[in-house]
Length: 235
Image (cartoon, rainbow, N blue to C red; front, side):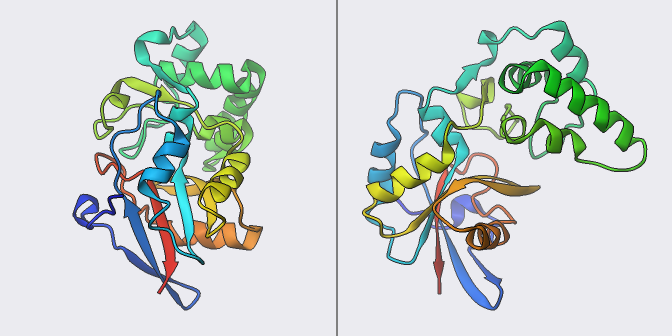
């Protein structure tokens, strides 16, 4: 097991205070996880010996999805004309391309269905004119929000790939909890520098809300850190 020494996540504080409790955020540095990897083996190799009773083990949705075979090379995706059109109206940010490229929009159309994406786009076009943001993803849903496209900071080979959201993240969290001997709660998370969501966990709603606040500044980092898992520990 290789815990991060902090240098890989330069600029990210490894402790935070939430509701009067100080929490350590311990990134777990791994090799680059590939589609042929088995998630159980990755968890066993990098997390099982480090996690302690009372911890929360959080796993990024990206490595779950990759090991489920839900990553696609850009050259495997043939965007339809509608995807080319809709992607032009999506705002790109330095933290993630979202659906702002034809390939990611094409995968959103496949994952969520064309009617839902068109309805989300129509509503967002109207409400954006009145200064309201975020309606597209609220309507399109978690499947659209979880789609990751390549950025300049993405680790190869995923700098040339689109990764969808994971299947059954709540079931994955429950399975991983069993794998680590029930020592800790487990969450599958979608965290970036703009905020985050808990896609599935063994926590209750209050615990999930607290975890989002603990991770809100994205202590794992956004680029080449290779820290796709971490541990939350009260200190």
